[in-house]
Image 1 (tube, one colour):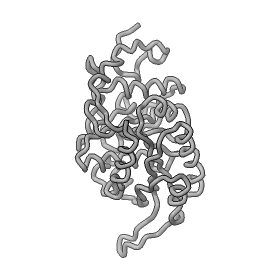
Image 2 (image 1 turned 30 degrees about the vertical axis):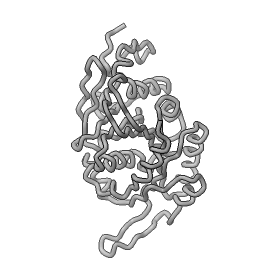
Image 3 (image 1 turned 90 degrees about the vertical axis):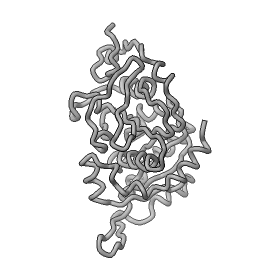
Length: 278
């Protein structure tokens, strides 16, 4: 059995299911994470990772110590949004998560790969194991909020997070299209079946705003997130515009500069998370 380096992406022992776990427990002794919130969606393409990043930015602006655990192992995008590509250092206690320009701690599979376009071709159990390692073997230290960016759907990765991590609840991300509304109900019902509190909902790509007169247009229909919010009694904590500048900032790794973070009603989310505190 080879010595543990902390790099799951290149670990033969992990790939063959023989990980020694020598570092397990060391990092957790140093970690004091007050609130863990997962961000999920029923389908891809609704901007879930962008919303995760904006939530982290919004809380960071309020002075909270914030981290992001990118649990989308096969399709990680959090490092790209923050312009991060350096491999995290590994110590005897575990992996040290790199910090963004504004101090947000981030761990993601893309930070452990030799190149950002290298595919991760793993089966479900290996993916679940990597998520557990990100929680147990990363030195998060003292955090007020850790946001977990889940892959879309209701498969192994969301199930692992809901069963393993001490979640205060989940934030559901959707878009106004009828298809997204239909699929997001699956994510909502999964959380309910797993008895994980629903903290809030964010509707992305909700409207377009004329740069001259500020008149709002609703290309996919108006007010559809409110229907799901009422149906499942989930507060609507934000409606984000279909804004090319937000996309450009994400592509440039400058998501922390986006004013869209200020559109999120994090006080509502904070109250719900505190109510479900453990």
